[in-house]
Length: 165
Image (cartoon, rainbow, N blue to C red; front, side, top):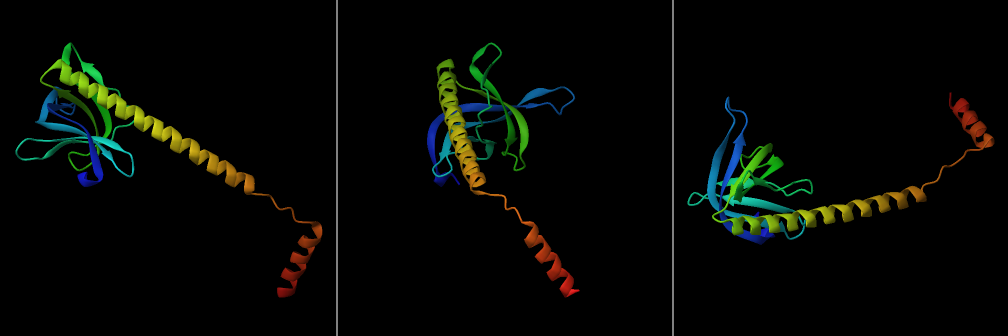
C-alpha cells in the first residue's frame, strides 16, 4: 500500500486518542513512532500514518479532508488536536478525536505547516474535480432533446396495438 505513495513529511511523535466511551473521558496513548504524511501517486489522496516503534502496528491511518482543522492542544505549543470522520487504525473506520505531541514546539509547527499545506492541496483538487464534473453533466444535458410525437404517430401506434389484440 505504501509503495504507491510518496512521503511528504516524517517525524517522531506520540499519538493519543480521546476515549469518550469511558465513564470518565480521557486521553489514551495510541503509540510513539514516526508520523508520516503520504500522498498517493495516482489518486492524489494524502493520509497521515503512524506506526508504533518496534512492533510497527498502525496507530493512525486516515485521509486528510478539506474540513479537517488542526488546533493547538490547550496551552501546549508542542501538541496539536484534530477530528477525523474515519480512522482506520483499528480496521473498522470510526470517528476519532486525535492528538499528537512532538518533542519541541518547532517540530509541532513543522507538522502543522505541512498538514495545512496538504489539506489545501486536497481542497483544491476536490474543487477542480467538482467543477469538471458539473461541466460534463451540463454538456450532456445540452445534448439531450425532448422528442414530441405528433398526433398521427400516436394514432398509428394505437392502431398497431389494436391489430395485435
